[in-house]
Image (cartoon, rainbow, N blue to C red; front, side, top):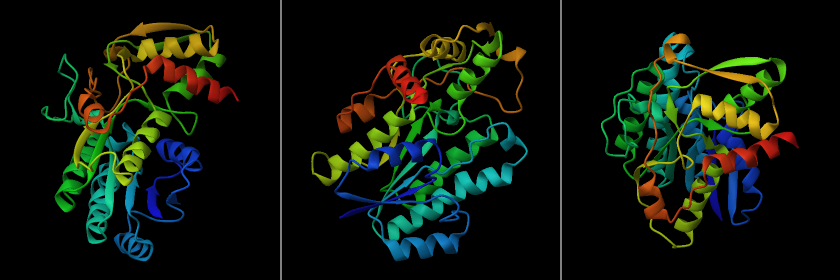
Length: 290
């Protein structure tokens, strides 16, 4: 039986994978978070992987507090840069295939066309730099690994923009949301399905394992303002949302003003069909209301 180690299992993506895992009878999952496995402890990682010998490692663990990372740079680097290197080293030792999740924040947002995997990276935040260095460290330790960059992740789990907008929209009459940062929301359930599909297709010889960097988000483009308006519309919330410029909402970390990802590579190589962002948002809001 194929054994899959999932790190960061209590986060949005880890929780989404866990929700879908029950349907996959040919896979044995090891779901871990910091309580079961402290990824910052290299000896603990080594012992765990040596003992369990997984066939795949899906690294969903990350330091994602983008603004706080500007003050906690060492912690961000430890989790986002050094941990992928540890996992890569152990994956290579046991011939386990590693799938690591990264971010659109590796780009500076100065493009006007969707970013491909070959475009120049230039992160402008501590978070973005730590994630880029994590990609580099992983692929140096284990070149047979896969990095999937994603953007604007949301789900019915944990803390995210969707849940914040629902909560604030129900509490307030008006909100102000940035309208000049453009990207694509990604439903964690869709990303989880893609990761599991890649593993399933690889195991069933429906496609070859092809390491390297891939981009995945839902289809379409919107601003944070558009995203907030769609959330309220689909959730039946009547709060008035004002569009504002980035300069009216200063944050410690610089966000890319444009971070739309080109997904043609992952669609072509793995035969992936990607849902439109509003369709997935509707699905998630229905899930959230249950």
